[in-house]
Image 1 (cartoon, rainbow, N blue to C red):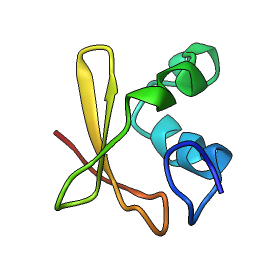
Image 2: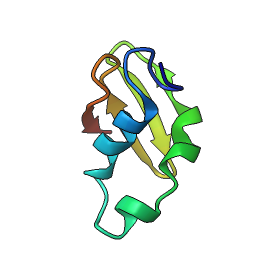
Image 3: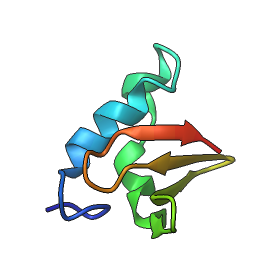
Length: 67
């Protein structure tokens, strides 16, 4: 369905990621430009955004944890 997962849209994943950023960054950070860094692992999808890494559930798009 999206770049990161075939089960949920990129917009859903971006909405989950916004919760891990401060108020200002939530709408100024270029989330979509980092979606190409996604790679599948045994635990989920690892998404690297600059110096931060997030583990994403492939089916729901929810952020499992910041790595």
